Length: 171
Image (cartoon, rainbow, N blue to C red):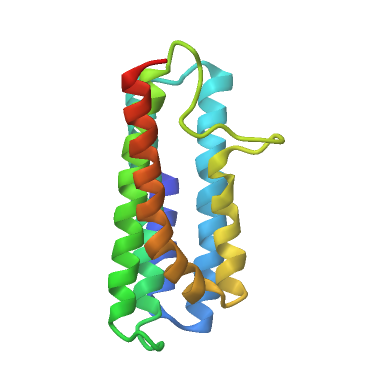
C-alpha cells in the first residue's frame, strides 16, 4: 500500500511540470520502485506470499507505471506539443497497461515452467528499467522519453500480444 501511495504522490509531483516537482517526483518514484521490489522479496523470503498479494502488487505496478506517463505528459503541457503531450502520456499509459496485462496472461500460462513473458538478463529483471525513470526526469529527458513511450509502449503491447498468440498455438 505504501508503494502505491508514494507512487501516486510521485506521479502527481511530475504532473506539476516544475523543476522542484520533477526533483521530488523522481525521488519519490525511486522510493516507490524500491518498495515494490522490497515487498515482493520480503513476502517470498518470509513465506507470506499469496495470490491476493500478487494481484494487489500487480495492480499497483500497472497503475503507478501508467500514471507515470500521464504525469509527465501533464507536466510537459507547456512544451512544444502543448496539451497534446497529455495525449502522448495517455497513449504510453494505455500501451503499458495492455502490455502488462498481456504479459501477466503469458506468465500465468507458463506458471508451471517458471518462464516469464519477459525474462531478465545479466541479473536484472525486465522491470528494473523502472529505476531509470527518475534519472530521465532529473536530466530533463522525460519529454523525449514520453514521445518514445507514446509509440513504443503500444508497439510493445502488440509484440506481447503476438507472443501470447504464439504461445496459444503451441510449439
